[in-house]
Each structure stands twice: as C-alpha cells, then as structure tokens.
Image 1 (tube, rainbow, N blue to C red):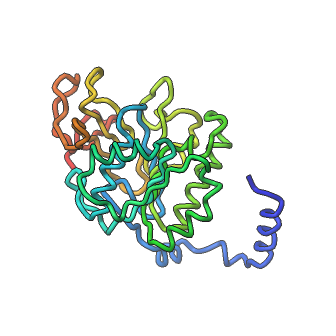
Image 2 (cartoon, one colour):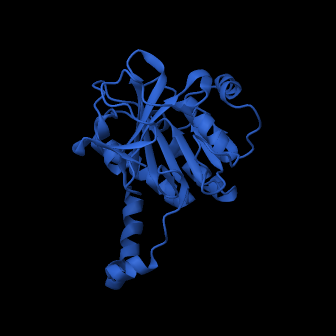
Image 3 (tube, rainbow, N blue to C red):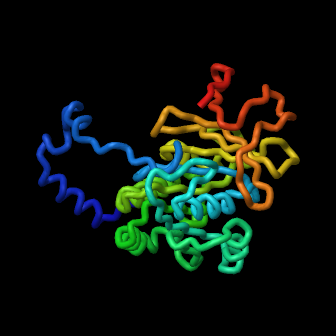
Length: 281
C-alpha cells in the first residue's frame, strides 16, 4: 500500500518530468528495448515472474531443489541446459534445516555452491526485501524461488484481489530490482479448476504472472507420474505438456500413461485444447 511519503515522493518526481519523458513513439521503444534474457527452457527469464501451482505433496519443493541443484551447477535438468550460469536464491518458508537436509540427501548427491538458501520463518518477504535485493546484487543472483507465496507474505485473505495484486506487484519489483527471474509456488483452489483458474484465491495472481505452470497427477491414484503444463506464457508462443516420473526423488521424462482417455503421445508435446490436436515441439 502506498504511504503518504510514497505519494509525496511520486508527486515530486512527476513535477520534474516532461511529456516526452513518458510518452514515446512505438518505433523508439522497439529500437531501444533490451532483448528477453531466457534462463531455462520456456519458463524462466530475467525480470520474469513464473507461477507454479500444484497440490500439497505433489513434490513442488522436491522438484525445485532437484531442478536448481542441477541448473546452479550448469547441468541440464530434464535434458534442458540453462542458457547462462544460474545462481539461485531459494526462499523456503516451510522447511526446517532438518527437512532441508533430508530433501538434499534424497535428490542431491554432491555440492551446490551456487544454491543459496533462506529458510528463516521469523520474517516475511517484505520485511527482508532490502537485504534480499542487496544480496542479489552483491552475489549476482539471477534466479529467486519463493516457496510459497502465502507463507512469504502471511496472506490474510487469498480471495482479496487487492491483496493479491499488491503481492504480485511486490514480486515483480523484486525481479526488476535484482535483474532476476522469480519462481513463486502457489496452492490450488478447493475446486482444483483447470488452466489459469487452478490457483486458489484471487485471480490477480494468475493475471499478473508472466508464465503459469500447473502440476497435476497424470492419473488419479498414481503418485509416480506428474503432468507439467504451461497454461499461460507471455514470453514465448510455446505451451508444453510434459509427463514426468518422480519415483525416488528423481525427475525424468516419460510417455503419457496409457490409461489417460486421450491418444497416447510422447511427453514433449504441445497441446492446443481449442483445436483438439497435438503439435510436436
């Protein structure tokens, strides 16, 4: 929420501006715009906010630890290499040191020097934002993971669009200030709706994310295979549907399970629902 001091500073800043400073020809914007900076696959870009929605227990956190261990060591994850060296700050608002160590033992076999952890539950994200930005600048952090959004902000009412909007704008300001990609975890609604309506609470979270990924169990009753689907992507035209086997904390591609009531396809495909067809990546 904007304070009276913020408003005063904004008013002073606006007084110093000329119309030409804020109204620009489209051609000038296009000519001088910096390019997109992809970090990994279709999902993570510098100054981009990616939202990951999945049921509790579906292995969002374990997936994150395994993924960013590989990427922070310059190694491919799911066969896809990072576009540049990844220095990740993983903000885990739910896991104690003992749980972190247990998860590390399950999914990681060696050192992770470029994987920085924050798991102090005494503070919320806005309280440590200044320290976070300074650390990211000092140590060239280019990927920030927030696990999860409600815990990071101590969200009072997930259905409040104003509160959700403030949280998302805050996250975007962090991404811009740190010149980093941001991945935020969020839980699904009780109705567990498909597409961009899957996340619980206010729709502003989905609306203000650049990329939205849903995690679901591929087949009800089978917890070994999960489906990863991009349901929104402002950064590229690519929308993927992947099937991933997560047995034993290891994440590997697999084919679509045969008991899904749609034609069997290879895992790395793009599904266009309104056209009812599959397109190869």
